[in-house]
Length: 172
Image 1 (cartoon, one colour):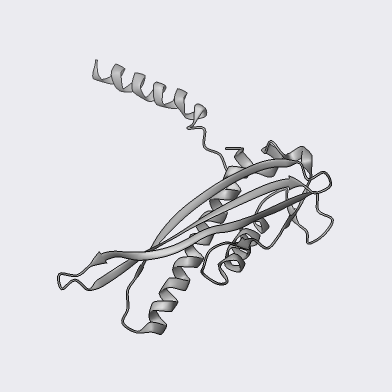
Image 2 (image 1 turned 45 degrees about the vertical axis):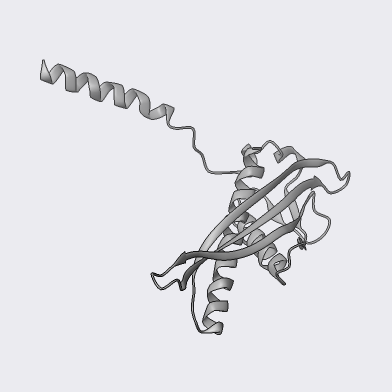
């Protein structure tokens, strides 16, 4: 009886493997917008936050993310598609304290909106907003504190770029 059950269990598992979980890597060829073009121009994002230069970090993160994509080429002009957007907000605040009520950790958060359009007609293909957060350590040395915040901003932008990329390719 035990052998029959284990063979049945193995057969069920093997039968379910081809079905998978539905997860797949984002690919431009399977994107709902693949017929709209093969080139994209990523414009420098606007900055509506009070933190200077976050728009440049965000744009660089998007360029890096899209440069790794398959089937879609970055182009500075005459591209089929245009990705534009804005950093809506950036802020940080204390998130962890020591027993002596000293700040030990901060949490930074950023919100970004983005729009993918056909370049020639300006038809909106996709529009969305993404928000992300990242913790970073507090430091009494101002230079080290700033370095930690800058690293947190880069990580937030990397996460947002990745999320925007997946959302655009999968039309969420």
